[in-house]
Length: 324
Figure 1 (tube, one colour):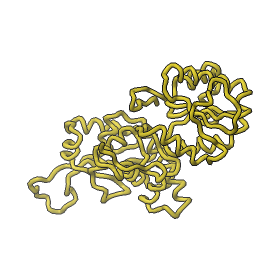
Figure 2 (figure 1 turned 90 degrees about the vertical axis):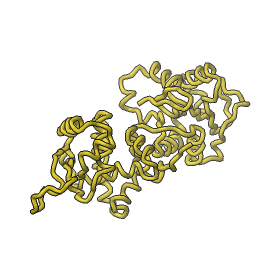
Figure 3 (figure 1 turned 30 degrees about the horizontal axis):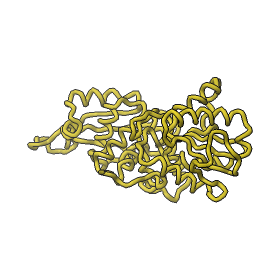
Figure 4 (figure 1 turned 90 degrees about the horizontal axis):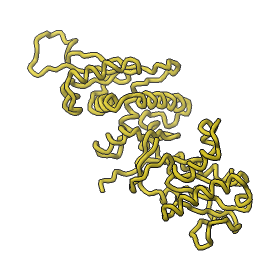
């Protein structure tokens, strides 16, 4: 999904990597490190499906000239000789010349001259820098950015919330369950996601892992939607595995007298329609939402969930709240 950076430009990738195959091992490690931090990186091995059947000459020209915020050029003797790397370089240089800003970021394995890259351009010497350090430098260069539709590869903080940080088998199953939940959230409309998120945040979790329940009037107040709209939204989520019922606050009490102030509740349940995971899906769903907001004020946490940014579920991608 294209995103807008702080300068108002729309890009599909935060960074694209241009390199020769002889240096693939180093570049692959950099690409993996960047992806694990939620950075949208164009690296060919991660794009096999997208590249399949494409006119690569035209497609790669578009990638390296238009679709990334920065391009890291991994210069080497092998890079200077290859047809495809020179095609990528020319596309990236066209962008750099057009915009007159530091789009092209050279990183050198050796001192081989690269056409169009003057010696006066600042570069990183890869003979002295490990992949992790280069990934750090790229992340710093990118600066602050908002992620969209991001779920961390290793959500260790989610495992802590679930109490399974030392149970590898449970982590494997919970991760699959969380991915299924993430796909359900992606299929929702913005209004559906808002209603469900607010219900999970402000509802009562005492009956987990069976359900979350919330006063109908409270959900009306926090969403700003009329009750009839809330019923329509929640009732329309059946195809995604939801069941929503309305119940009285003390409907099981033996005293049938009505106490002033008693109010109906929405009782919300979710089951994973894939049906092949034996794990408490409502618990995973709730902790995923709450964990995505951990460390944020409510406004910023809600904004992260709206963007489906689950960076706060992993130590590698978590960040402090920023109110500047």
